[in-house]
Figure: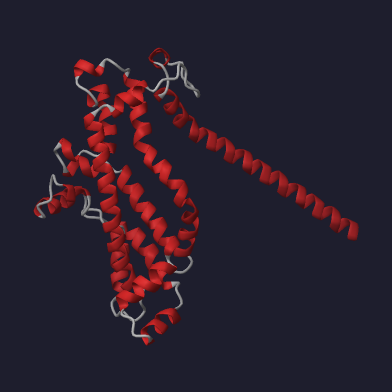
Length: 296
């Protein structure tokens, strides 16, 4: 009997290792499949004109050059759109974090009388929204159409992120709040001194959500702004992909760089800030989402 149990354990151990190995292989293959287009774009951005035009670029650059990167950075329009994206991302993330925090904290308190209906109302907005045209009319009535505020206010708070933070605040033991009240702390002080520090992982991951959302969004800049001075870098990239090199330079200088290489260089530069920042906050990502989703 003992030998049979040992052989069964060995068999199960072998099967588990085989399943794990297959899972790793599948994940690696899927990762390579996802990375291939990205690597090809990088290769095109740093390859010589001749190889890009002939379509011989697969994974590695050929005839390495920084010509296309310099060409994009030499565009005043691109630099302006890059600045608008950086500024709007910083301001939007700050405003969104403040609004989300001051909304989620009271809704996480059990002594708030209207807590449940207000929370259900927020959940309702996740399922149904007003639509593009009504939202556009609201922005117009607010008088912020074609202004920097149009990139901030219309989407300055997310129902999903608010629900995550509400749940995260609820997970903090009530004894902390009671002890602070005994010491005479106000609700604002409790929020600032206790709730925010104890919810750092959730707050960081929500901050990441907001920053990535704002950086990657181009549609609101398209419909709420008309002037080129408010064009974001993602809208700029969209125009480059749609129009080619003419979106970067006028016809007199557009022929200096092949369209495909310019598109690739523009895309790489546009996504680089997120790629640089993400590794520093990645450690909070899984932990923050898990903390925010433990309880309902």
